[in-house]
Image (cartoon, rainbow, N blue to C red; front, side, top):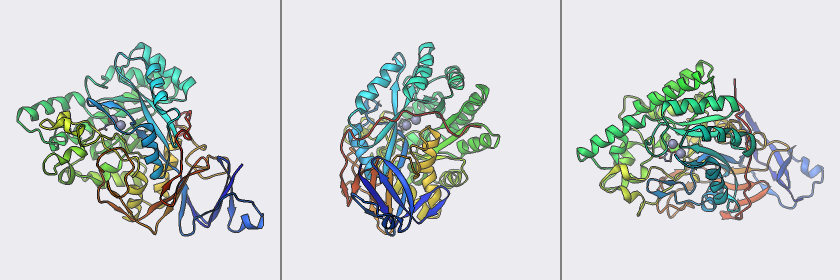
Length: 474
Ligand code: URP
Ligand code: ZN
Ligand code: ZN
């Protein structure tokens, strides 16, 4: 078995920083060694990673991606191969993608289809949540089968997108009751889709068709209302673990914080776009440019009554929000986003960002929004614990998978289509953004996949990870 020591770096965990070396044997972390110990023990090394002046952190875990998702009259453009290579470039060593079951479809077939797409194609490890777009007797039974036999222990439901993925309150309650029996987690897209559709039709009827109306038709109050409703339903279902995905709004965060204060098993994630982007600076760009930033929930206004950015960063500091994911759902501008020319409601919803989450949230550390430790916690360790992968993933400790990101705080990263960009989209959502830090070296289960600005991984190295239950329950 190959032995790879990572020497002279600062190992960062959610609880602190340690000046130790990391010894990797094969696919696992063998030991953390005091400085100099590997020399005095005469450990033979096949390869040494020198991390002098760098941070050594667990590989990033992005628990919300949509590779190849059919959506909005088209499909997300990253395959599992291109998307996981981009993930590796971004220091991400595990993704949890969303397998799809739509109304009238079979859950097992939906999951099998996702295994077909991902199997043998991934550069880093992967796992699945299951979208349940049609809650009925059969899909409820199938949920329990997936938990017991398939290592799929979380299910995404939608209060938005009527006629596409939408579940009504009765269906949601039934799915939550099933989850409370089998121990799984319900993930919720919390926006009031029925009310949104009314506003969408009214904007279109008035000739308000530009991308910015996507945000006006999905007010933050609707996200707050739906979040609160989901929390109430989860409480009635027996305090079932509820994880609100891609949170964008202060109203929703307030509902979440109140529920957490009450001791409910309710958790939340946000994404970089909701921490940095605004309606005015992105969605409302001249012409049709704003279509690049159409996602749901939408990018919020900086002139709102709430400071959504400020509140979300605070929520991350205070553990009201547990996780940062990307909701990576990439569409090209040409021919895909362009489907909504003249009608914002036809723009495929989603943005690509799997490559940039570690970078963008690290910039939050530079800006004083988060500590270095909290960066590791929200992007690496908590995602593993939230979705039943810890301590195999999310921690640098003996016995854990050797998934490691060596981060250089002294270099810069310029993001852009002609700079750093490995996703399949024809544009970058983060064009021109400069990060005060850089992905240096990335190891996936002991294999160096990124080094010296080169991708050294291979398709098929990434393995499917069967997950356990949420590890945070009261
Ligand atoms: O706009 C988004 N978020 N697209 C991906 C699908 C979803 O709702 O997560
Ligand atoms: Zn969603
Ligand atoms: Zn999503």
